[in-house]
Image (cartoon, rainbow, N blue to C red; front, side, top):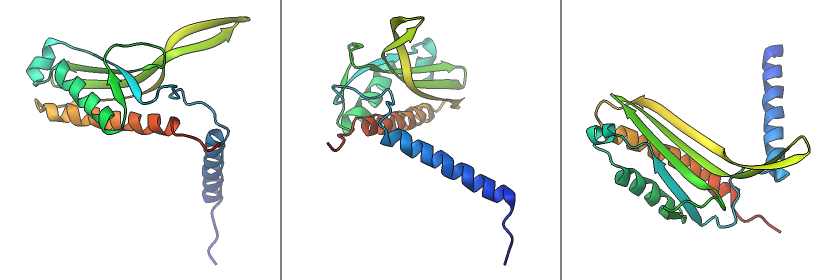
Length: 165
């Protein structure tokens, strides 16, 4: 019979502990920050416009259409006029030379306490992004954006699914 190394056993124990903690976090109903009252409607803000967009063959209209279409395909109605009531999806695409950066965030009003006082602020409660080069092929930027929006939609819908009573 082959001996099991202590390193292997330690790794298995750590992995099981992490899985247990993650599972318990969701079981307890801890918030993700993506929970909303009107989860079928989404405020959308697109930023990051510059002359470089035109050189890359992109436009704000094209980016907005890509994001809104993905939301609609998943039953979420985009609202281009931002209201912070239930948060908003913030998308920022920047291009410099042959490099690009895409940021996707969900921002909302949050309340926190410090020194026996309560405060409200707008904060990013979910975010992801990507940076790369596109070699004058804007489809690379759009593909990255699409993947990031899919990640957001997945987490957003998971956080807003109906829970059994």
